[in-house]
Amino acid sequence: MRDVVGTLAPWQAAGLVQAAAHGWTSAITLSTRGESACPHLEGQVYVVDVDRTGLTLMTVRHGEATVQFFAFARPVDVLDELADRLDQLIEAGVAVRPPRR
Image (cartoon, rainbow, N blue to C red; front, side, top):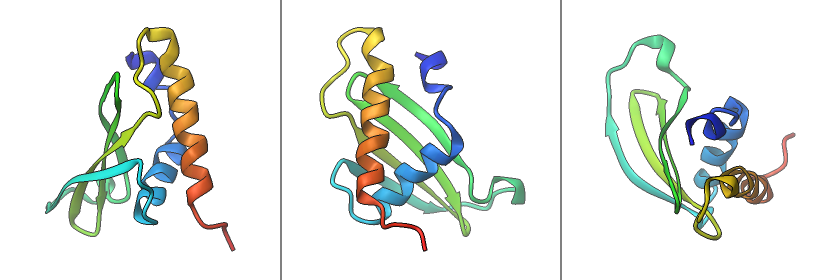
């Protein structure tokens, strides 16, 4: 699983977080809290967990750490399906984000 999730590019993870900020219903914010972190963590997105139902990411921004869960359209039944579910999640997230100006 780690190898597959490791192929997720930073811009793809950031895109999922941006889609969540624009009200994407496949994303659920699990927690937000004040966090004093080192400056090099600012703006970073980290993979916290992945399971058969989705992907959990943590973002550090403006002194806050936010953890969000991104649900797959369908659960992963075998490891070979994970890459497809991640691709589907990223494509769906792109459709939610407003276009760049």
